[in-house]
Length: 117
Image (cartoon, rainbow, N blue to C red; front, top):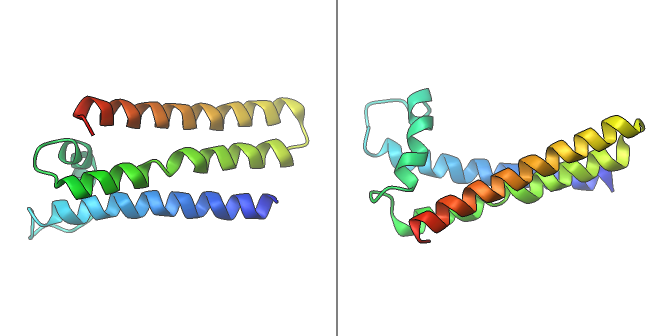
């Protein structure tokens, strides 16, 4: 069961990364002479996707792909819970991954609701 959960978590994180890179590629269209993956462009993604310049279809795709982070971290929490023999570390790791999942879901929902999507 653990290898399946790990593969599912990796696949979900890959989908989230794919959605992020799609936004980076869209940003690259406005800066054709710069490399695609620059550090400054990574910081521009959030402002671009929630701003008026982003196409609605791209914004919806971004929300859907970034929502995959939530179940990915829940899968990792389950993996820690099932495989860690030390009870304190098991509880701490599970709580940490669940907390990250909760904060990611809350942040994405807050941004989407604030924008009206």
